[in-house]
Length: 251
Figure 1 (tube, rainbow, N blue to C red):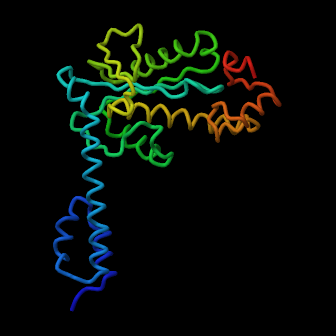
Figure 2 (cartoon, rainbow, N blue to C red; figure 1 turned 180 degrees about the vertical axis):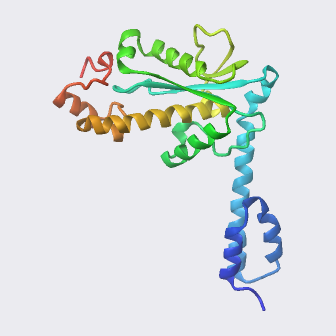
Figure 3 (cartoon, rainbow, N blue to C red; figure 1 turned 135 degrees about the vertical axis):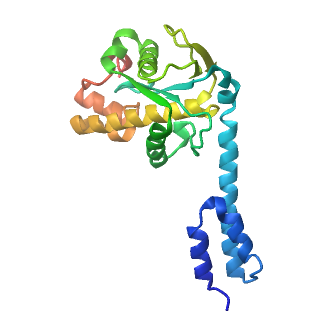
């Protein structure tokens, strides 16, 4: 007696994606349209995994290119443009056989996916560091120098010394390690993308905490960027202690 379609669906749903081709093969001779629909859904699921593995492999091009240097570290930042809050940098050294899927430029990921990857990256990374520079310091030395400072702090937190830095478009002064600036690096390098995730999640969490302290500005929604509602709140309430005075002079 043939298995119920619902039973076949349950089997496919509970099967590890890597093993789906074997299970699909078991039911291919079942000509019922409902079964074939479930098999097609499973094939698409497996194909999506294969495409993600391929994308992840392509994003390790620079890591492979510079693997002779030993520890390859990705560097990126979050928060250069906002009117309030810190600039945060991430530094990540991934294992050479890194198998973390779905890492991408943090701006291309949903908040839920970033949060998931944040914990996975910290768990699987050989080393990581997070540098934070506050608004007052940004006003003192300007945002570019503050970004460099945050990056140096992040590098300094690494438990192993990197042999080469893959940077998202910049060259960090005051660092004697070999640097490779990569234009749009967070979309081309797995290490830089991982660093961008650590930086953005850290900063977003900080802005949500600031939203509790300064509820009138809506930091949880816009994270300090120049949304119309944010600028209206500045005009109404004046700047908070975490606003960058050099950024809001014309508001």
